[in-house]
Each structure stands twice: as structure tokens, then as C-alpha cells.
Amino acid sequence: MLIKNVILDGAKKDVRCTHAFVSEVANELLAHEGERVIQANGGELLPGLHDHHMHFFATAALQRSVDCGVSSAPTATGQLHNAESLSHMLANSSGEGWLRGVNYHESIAGDLDRWQLDALVSDRPVRIQHRSGKLWTLNSLAVEALDLTAHKELAGIELDDRGIPTGRLFRLDAWLREKWGQQDPLDVSVFSRQMASFGITGFTDTSVTNTAATVRQFRQLCDEGEILQHAYLMGDDSLDFGHLKILLDEDNLPPLNELEARIRRAREKERGIAFHCVTHIELLFAIAALNSCADLDPQIQFADRIEHGAMIFDDVLPMLRALNLSVITQPRFLYERGPQYQQNLTEHELAHLYRHRTLLDAGIKVGLSSDSPYGPLNPWQVMQSSVARRTAGGVVVGARDCVSPEQALAGYLSSVNAPGGVVRRIAVGEPADMCLLTRPWSDVKNDLSAVLVSHTVVAGEVIYSRIED
Image (cartoon, rainbow, N blue to C red; front, side, top):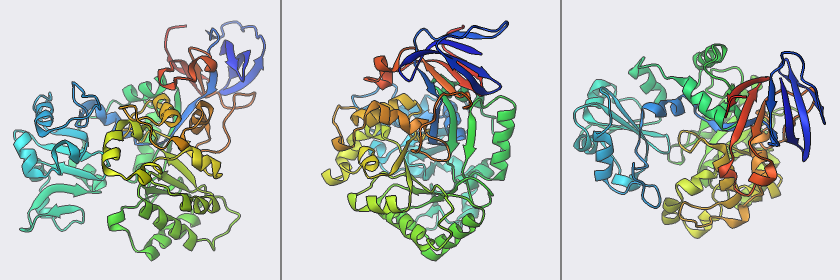
């Protein structure tokens, strides 16, 4: 395949791909007989984007879910404001059987339980996920369908003072998946093509519930061409490779010695550690656990990660640097959830929310990501939020953490094994995973949210074309 007339590193070039790698880069190359030729017309050619933190199957499931956070007729902030709006959305959802809602926040209609959900929908089983991802709330039909009463001793099933399940389930995704059993299969190919339209050539699925069975499922979908991108997985303790994903909830932290033991077992498999840390306390706990295992071979580079790092105060920066931790952040939440952050956080906390520039200045590696489906998938919107740090209402949050367009782009161009590290390049011998824009970088960098991708290439094969060649 030959891509002609691209802008590469500030100059016009032709680029040829052979057997999944870049084979030639020159001022002008002649097409071989029968070779596919793409006319770039001066569009910028970039390495393919890698989303460093997302949840693939949960995002694919959005196609059959109700978004409980945004109304069909959005307000100025894009948020629902009352139970009546939520009830209307749920009642007018098509289909029969289970109804799945996502992206709920208590600012919409308070803390839901089964009985409040019954008042909204009582003729079909309903499950609604909190936007944090840690809580599912079921109505009474759903409680009965899953027979929660028979499982009420299970940690994570909330009971009222009478011992009756309230319909609120905490961190029970794996158990719920097993109980729900096989449902209508997801059409993941639609979602994969959507990712390709944004220039995404790879992603890291950071779901804590990933097991060996999940790995086999991903491999099969990739082999069958249902997933077009390079897929990398982290997961639970049973895996022998990839990062060990550790969830930390401030109100339910594990004993430190048990956490240390998990880290040491992962180290024996040469696995890195990825800590889910949203609050300051969770971050300090993760740092303490890693420091307690500092006696392990210092020559081994485990590329440990902090997922989210939503709240990072200045006094923690040297600790992150000392442990060589990467922070995988999601600045688009500032736009999506800005009004609620402004209402619930202090000025000091707002100034330390989803940081970027100050982390880079402190020598800490930063990878960007969507956290889809909890955040929007579009990487160009994520990058623009790291540049501007504006809420939907136009308020700048934490101005000192604004980065340049180039720094934002670098957050998606680093290696899967080293988020925020060395930026991948398009050069002879490098993998032919590429993203071709419709225009030069100089034309689009001032508004990254408006970027359009012309072609996306994985292993030398076009997986997305905005128009037919």
C-alpha cells in the first residue's frame, strides 16, 4: 500500500507499507503494479492512537442501553435534573425483557433503590449502573429474577434493616455476568469500526473482571475480524501476563498485608500493577503498598500505573516520580461532569483534579484515555479537554494543568507498555499502524475536537476510510 502526499514531521512525503510495516518513506514514490494507492492530499499522517484505559464490552453494550445521564433534549449542561425526566426515558425505551441503564448520578433523582426504581418502571426488570461503575441498582422484578434473597450473604449485596435486599449491588460485575448468563450477543464489530473512525488502532481493556476466558474471547474476536484494533488486556490475579488490576475503594480498603501479598505474587509472574485510584486516600494507599514491596529486584521494570489519578496533590508528586509510576488520566470528565465537580469540590480540590501539565513538569509520565463507557470515546475530544480544561459551561478548571496540543496528542501516541513514555514514530521498520487526518496538523491543532480522520491503518491494512479511495 502506498500513501501519497502526506504531511509527516512537517514535510510532504510518500509512505509505503509492506507486510504490516513501514517499508519506504521518501519525497516521491512510484506505485507498484496493482498496489493500493491512497491520496492524502496534504493530510497529516500520525501513528495510530492508543486508548490506554477503556472497557470494551461495556462500551459495546451501550448500543442496547439507556444513557441515564443525558436527556434526549439536553439542558445547557447536558444533564438530567429530575426523576420525571429519567422516568420518561426509561418508560419510552423500546424492546422487552431486561432494561439496562448506565451513567446514572444521584444528582439526577437521588440515591436509587429497588422501590424507587419500581416507581419508575414496574413492568420489566431494570438494572441501572452508577457512572462510577461500582454500583448497580435493580428494581424488584430484577431482584426476583436474580433471586437476591438466596444470595444476601454475598458481600456487595446491600440489605435494609429488615435483612431485605435493597437492589443495590456494589462491585459485583463478575457475579452479575455469571447470573445473567448468555444474553443477545453484542455486535462488537460496530463499536470497533466506530473506534477506527477516530484513528484508534489499539486499546487497553482495564476491566478488573478480565480472566483467561476473557482473553480467549478477545483473541477469537480479533482472529475473526470482529475487533479490528490491537487489543491488550489487564485483569485479575489468575492471569499470567498483563497488568494486575487492583480496585481501591476508600470506604472499603483491603488489609495492607493482603495487598502486598497480591503484588508479590504478580511480581513473580513479572506482571505490572495497575491501581484504580480516584481519591487522595486511595492513591496514598497504593503508594504505601508499592513501597512495602520495594525489596524486590530494582532492575526489573514493571511499568506500574495509576488509573485515573483523579485527585493528585502536590506533595504526592515526588512519591509518584520515585516509583516511576505512569498516570492514566481522563480530562474529558472536566467537560462532562464540570458542574457537579464545581458544586461538590473545594477550590483546592478543583485545582488538583485530573492533572496533566504539572505531572509532566514533575517528570511523571501521563497517558490519556477515555474510560469509555464512563467517559466519551472520542480521543480528539479528550485531547481538547486536556488543552482547554473547560466545563460544558465554559469555566476553566485547573488552568495550570493545560497542555499544548502536541503534549495532548503524545498522551495517545505512547506505547501500550509505557503510557506517557516515548512517542511512537512513522519510520522505516516501524509497525504500519497509522492515522491519516483530512488536514495538516497546523490546521487542526487549535481545535482538536473538530479533527476528522481520513484513513486508519492497522498492520498495513486499511480498517477505516472516510471516503472510498
